[in-house]
Image (cartoon, rainbow, N blue to C red; front, side):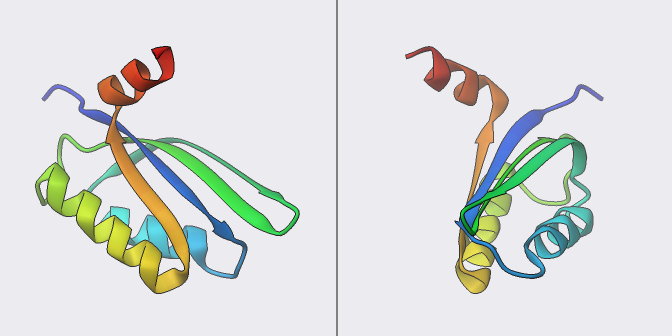
Length: 92
């Protein structure tokens, strides 16, 4: 099976449980985290993940929408983008 890499970004005011909630959701969807970087600056949380969605239990759009909803629940913004689109946007 060919990998389908995507980028997840999480940004918002820092609080307990952000990483746990996002990672639990990804586990439930069978999305593999290949790389993760997170930092906190002046009380604001920023995380970027590279994930493989090729074995996911749901379609990309459904996962993207559910991650956005999860972000609203926990007070952060969560975005899921396909790697190729993310790379194209960075070139512009």
